[in-house]
Length: 301
Image 1 (tube, rainbow, N blue to C red):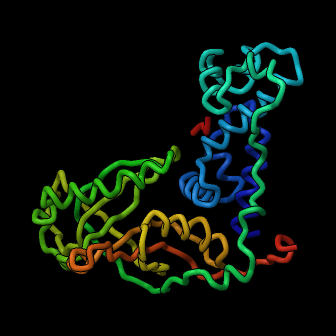
Image 2 (cartoon, helix red, strand yellow):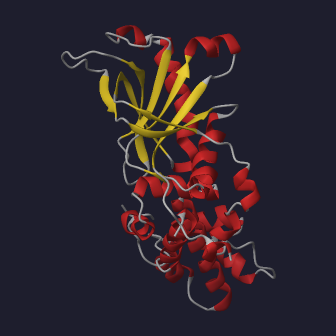
Image 3 (cartoon, rainbow, N blue to C red):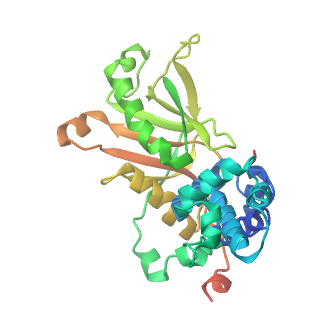
């Protein structure tokens, strides 16, 4: 069973919970992933968050019920986990551009969101063979000292936040406060401290040999050694990350193992070129054998 099959199993489970309050841990468990990694894969493959998908599916099923039954708007709002008719109406208008009562009377139904089928997102064999291939390498443990910032996967907020984190790290010259810098011209960005709701920490710093006392408010973390897939950024870093999690990883024979993602920017080369010169590292485990013949034939909300 590959990534697509595993995530589809979670989606199928989510479909049975449209009138319930599924816990993201239970949803992710259907796919055999951690809640954070499941949400990241889901968003990279489909372009939407788990929460947004659930919200659109609930409203679409409520819209069907408005047309096919005489049940009150309030009853449907409560069935689909809205605390009030007002909250349901606001969400309904945002998705369909019309109030529920008017929708019920309208002559033509609006565009509804049906259940996801990940077979629509699977790459053909010939495209997989042409994918950007990473360099696979083993690294030893690396200690990073720097600043920690909080962000979230929701609505791709992390892609908006992270450039600002780097700008702040540079403008405040935080790097000058890092003792025993090993590679002064290389900035590390490390995603860590993942939470079930999709929030996480992004630490920006440099490699350091410091073994002394705590340096608060600076933080220290260890990037564990092991096998990593290293991707060279050529253009948009968000596009590269979406490619890694939405295309390369699901279609590869590698598994993402526990541990943080991190990226390394060659600061001097980036300044000279006028564009980021960055390598993105993803912790992976060795290829596993999969039978692809079958497939090729917290509270979420």
